[in-house]
Amino acid sequence: MLLIGLLFGIGFGFFVQRAGLCFSQGFASLIMGKGKRILTIWFIILIVTSIGFLLLGLKPIGQIRGAGFFNILSGIIFGAGIALSGGCVLGTLRQLGEGNLFYLIVWISFIPGMWLVVKVLDPMLLKNYNVQNILIPQLLSIPAGYVTGTICVIALFGLLIVNKKK
Image 1 (cartoon, rainbow, N blue to C red):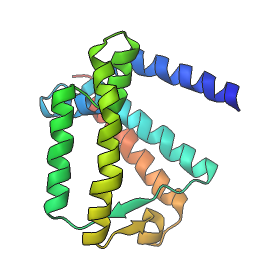
Image 2: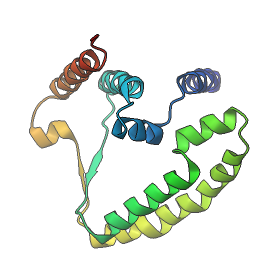
Image 3: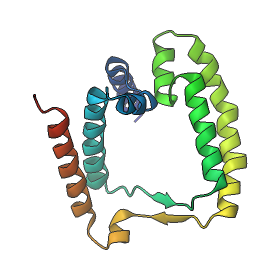
């Protein structure tokens, strides 16, 4: 298992580095109208993970939380962190792997940031909001295969639209 994990990590790292993948930069590209490449990658990731979760019998659990002050505060802190660091965790690891030592400081700063989220912000959210764990198939009362199929069809149409030749 260790060897499989190591090979997967090397392969995934190679893919991320070659693709220049960073989700926060991808959002910025989409907002600025330059997101064709990153949107294509997102659709492919959505299809692969949806089918993988279904085939492996995994159940991705989402959470529904109320909107309010702590959600806005968390969003501001998250956005400021991305703006200051220049990317998300995945982009930071990619930049660090490429030898950009500035991202070593960013990576080290994730440790107190994650501690703050786990020990301070999450308890405040759990205390002040009615948090519900949900599964989309249970929420909609339909089999998981139909949900996965619908997600994959929508993502395939998205791929066709994004990559349509003019």
